[in-house]
Length: 339
Image (cartoon, rainbow, N blue to C red; front, side, top):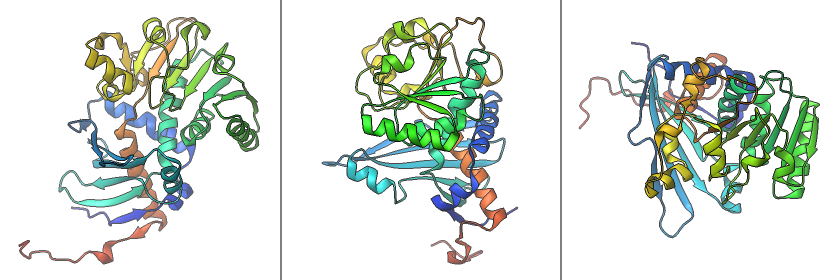
């Protein structure tokens, strides 16, 4: 049996390895695995650990991907404060642990600080590619954080972006974000003064915010619009859910989402409101039927994407001599008693 070298891949090495194009390709391939039923999901889908008298909490997800022969577990430490964000920019707070599903042995740890943004953006990109109106060239981004930036990079891989509109609550942040995108991509980037101005007449809209209340109203959306919502809370009004073709990244996974969880607790949630998920979109079971079709895609984040992407990064690191080989730190006790 092949023994994969126990390796740690740092954020710096991840950034040297993973490109937006790689992330999009991996996202497509992994959704095909969903469609083929080659995924074993964790139960529960997400485990949460809260630290008493502290804003810090932890989230854990896991899965097995039979198509590529790997198990993986994403562990995240969250502290949604200025101090917490500062720490997360420089120290590991998001990692994927890789394991051999045949033996249960762990063989890799991949830092996901940079990679998770591209993973999230890549999932959005493949959905947008399949659902957008033909010849769309404009993108609206609501939010100016890491996920918003990475999403622009991945969407730029699947559509010929000619115009980007940006909005966030902070004028300074949205102007700095727009300037960076314009410099990085050589694309016209407009800074908007309101969400309404940003989304009106937009063909493709991505929301990546922590807004406490819905910020998008269905009446603002043009016929044919695609909205990909990946924010912490409910970003679109209930009319959007009722009147648009509602797609989940994965049917059971979105039950972890803030608004879906609340509707379940209130007894008002009907799973039949979901027309399909991204595996059905990528395989063509769900598709645009007219130029006026509007789509709302709600994403909570798929651990399958994290694991598949981390495994590809691990393989590339080993092949290129990157990462830190931890084999020397393991003591070979083959044949010895465990106790």
